[in-house]
Length: 396
Ligand SMILES: *Cc1c(COP(=O)(O)O)cnc(C)c1O
Image 1 (cartoon, rainbow, N blue to C red):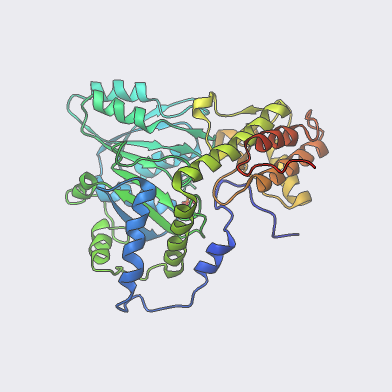
Image 2: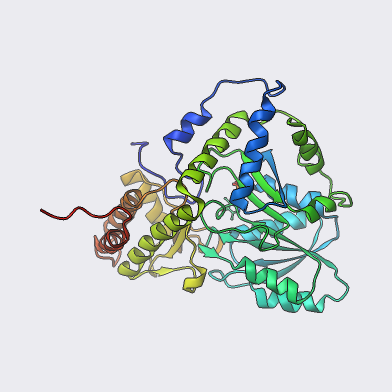
């Protein structure tokens, strides 16, 4: 089977050759004096992607989940109340993690396919006169359903209630793919990882920490050791690491930031929108439904698509893999068997996106879906032609 086909899972994402080479470096001594010259500018540059000047960046050798554990344990104490909405598998996982850390979790259950309910948050926060709620937790891009939540609206809900809770945002599958504004949205903890928008190998949790969140580490009582912000920030300030750093990933991140800078962050977002919109045009042409209920909720990094009644989405994704060697995201949690996902984030072009659309279309045709072979691909082709950045050659 070819290993050249792109993956259409929503992470880890395709690693561009340039980043594979950047990560292919020999061991150097992280205690040597020149390590600071590598690490410090990288941590500074990551701030631009988070859109923060007042926050600080803390990384750990870990996947994104470790970033969440770090965010929670460094800033909260057992028994602290947190407000969180569940509208997909990832928001569910954070609830589970909070409970395992003995937090008092106030859950707002929402229909999957919707996003963070700013209006309900406003009600709950206004009712919380004694300010027992210490944190509001939001998954910016719910990767299970392809739903993007309005973080600015959540911030407004907190502001109108004049509530001092901190705002924690999971931006693992949005950062570097969709607009994220840590400072403007007043985000206290923004959790991401290396293997999605940054197009790198898995293994680095990347967390944006506000001044307020950093202050909270002084009183937070959740046990932590490996993930202690204070150890990491203290060592980083001297240009070091409290333990062995993921050196290859730091080199990779440096190059990834260069690539994002060269393309321009806003252009990166525009490219993701265009790729996503082509996929959405294909879904429409197939006559299928997105899990995301309304256009304002559409994610530009992943589309979750319901299969027609009577079909099993796991059979479809397995078929695409077995027959054409192409991976798509499976339905997670409530979506298992009912929906498949097309990841379209990271290093992707329109031509790559089209290859995924044709592969899933062939798979649907093989399995006798009521979908016209070519219909989605044509819709996406038309959209990509119309919106191509490079002027088309005039036919002679
Ligand atoms: C990928 C992802 C994570 C992190 O998962 P890891 O496998 O631990 O890196 C967290 N939240 C969301 C929304 C994600 O898409």
